Image (cartoon, rainbow, N blue to C red; front, side, top):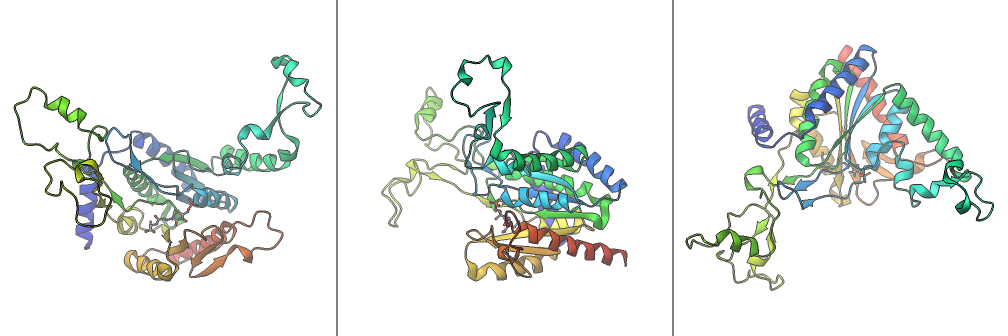
Length: 370
Ligand code: 9Z3
């Protein structure tokens, strides 16, 4: 696609897909965060994290989602903060967040981390007046929680962490474009680290049903009551049921379950325009851009990662496979968590990834200065 075409595709996408409700407030927060850190000479990384949803209805009851819990993004955020970066954490609402991630998705519920003060001495607690009792972290977790709590408080108190949520693919793209543009004053000190699992397909607004997609014809019959008889069919949107008038009302030819098309939900998705090119050329032209490539087939991962780099000409693609992503990535060369020193407490692969990215960022900044 020529750059004129990609600008056209961008205009068409952003003018027809509504902005998220809180975009203006998010961008105002991002602007003051970025300006403060630019003035202080800090590096700023925009981390995207978690999965985007694809709504099937405007008043959304149903949506398509993906597996991502946001572990990569939330873990990376902690390592970037430790490396001195200010972090904008653009994440899927309710996905994992830096620091709290150690407890929120643990096998224990958060209440399991708590005890009544003086607990452990039998069953007296229930008889005590609630106002005279205190709730404390249970003894065996105190050291671990204190360590994480201190890091979290330090990041917040020094204004090094800004958390901004998204839900849908549309929200994500509006937010990403807006924040990337605000990062321009940082020049090469800005880093975009795209770890979110971004949907490749979506329902375009002109085909999206306003109301909940119906599974029976009862609602249509209600609307049709009293109207002069008309052709059947209900103004299908993408993601709606086939209508009895469809030519394949009987059954499709292939060996699918024998359910008439009118009873099925047929979801018809368009490809999401590829905006990485616009990010590189227009939205954040001087910053360094790192993206992740996710595959499930090991035979194509490296090829796909290289193809992405060739196509968008950004700075780094980190490849990972769904099943091994927590301990192995392809990063020019494979990086494996077992390369970490044995005394590393939790052996997280991000402990290797972030220093390597940060080193490349040093080189990027130096090359722009030269
Ligand atoms: C990734 O590949 C991330 O590493 C994961 C992290 C989503 C696998 P978790 O959140 O998983 O820790 O559970 N992110 C990029 C995924 C993606 O959508 N990439 C696009 C692609 O592969 C390019 S932007 O085409």
